Length: 143
Image (cartoon, rainbow, N blue to C red; front, top):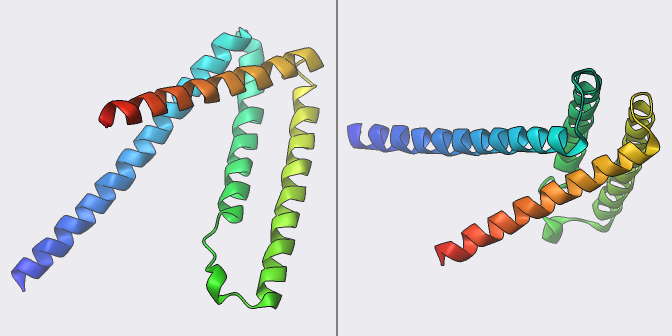
């Protein structure tokens, strides 16, 4: 019985550590992204103070929509009615994403020009490409 409890405790700690490592990794990436965007846009202190709350709220809401859209669905067990319902949910999530982006750009226009918002999109894309290159390089070096 002691061995069983020890094994369960060991596995629980392992899963906890793994989840904690993942969270720490995500936080590190967010910090890198924050620095990259701040530098890429050359934000002033006043711009940063206005921009980051808007950006962080937008990202939080997008992550929530992403989680909802990517929720595990066992397709083999879906009836046609359930599948139709799921498709409607996906369409609704896409509509919410569109409305969220529309509101985000409207909020950004209060502090940035349209050109500067386009620069933000480019800087974000550059960051994402850079992260993917680094990820692929690390995967290739593991092999």
